[in-house]
Length: 449
Image (tube, rainbow, N blue to C red; front, side, top):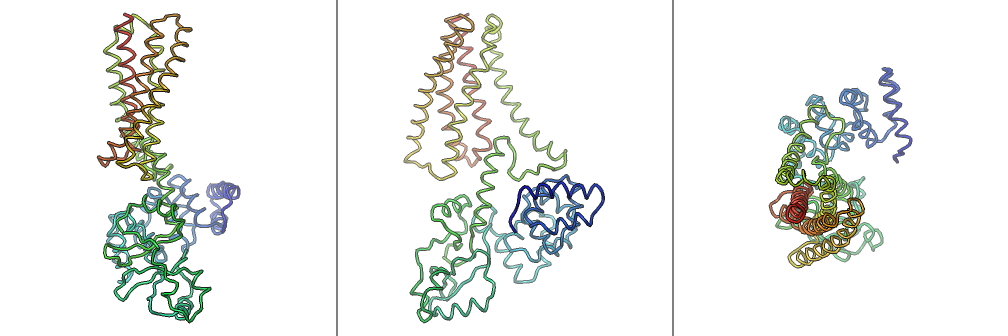
């Protein structure tokens, strides 16, 4: 079923109206007509108390799928209100990789859920849970069609007819040897148009890339993008087939990476629940505000060193935000470019110095241009040549240091295994504020007072 934004928006308000009027039958009928992704969107857009009512009205046959479409924190908050036996019932039809995601949200009840599974599914689940969430093994799908190389196309076709429905997004069949080691794959298109009497080896693609289970998900997404893959096999270090990754998994990875970059700028997690309880949201944001407060006091301390200078020339206080703002923006531009390059795997030993030199030159050129412009504006405003010269040099110094910091900070944080997208902005703001104020007020103290 295709999602229609306008229709869903109307349905969203209609369902809330039905809940407020306690017309649960009408609300249930509207929910039954929606795709699970749309139901997940409605749950994610609802306050906590409304979620429990909506959940109780959803058809049990699609509840598991709805859970798989919720973001991590929203799903965890909802699952905290659901009994374990109910969770077990609604997740029976979930793919193993989706079930693994769900269990990782419920560490306290994971053992009970796992013990409720049959032996085969439990083993499959444990194989996924043995890998971290941020590597290929942690997001792989265990449902893959496999065959041997020494059979004919006709045998494969009969085998597929016997299977009936193929796993979702199956564009290729993986070929294994007798020990289960990956040998290559045959594509469905080739299978259909090839003479049934020929052997699998005649259309075997041995150059189809396999993905080691410990490959970072960001690298997996890059590989899919470069090679336009629909699916790819996941193997262990002995080339034994473990499962597969499909394009819909990669879309989720890309979406989460994008959300992570965006939310990290505010110190928030990409899975942040917009309608989470007030206390929980306050606690999360308070941590970031506390970190920011420390950096703000550091900048204030630098300003305090020159309080006598500011008292003698009020114009300095008026122009200080200009120096800080220009440095912050210039540094953020470089920071964003470098973080993106790191995420895409574009930076290495061979080109890091070149990029640093390029950003330094850009900082120098932009610093010179805007130093002249801001100096001219300051002169027209305050009619003081000395003040204009001082702020011009301060802008030049701050923009050069901002470019250098924007390039170096994410590289250093990345080497320290600290997420540059999360911590880079705070560190950069501190550097540009301190350098900017030091340069501006320091030069003013030396040459104007």
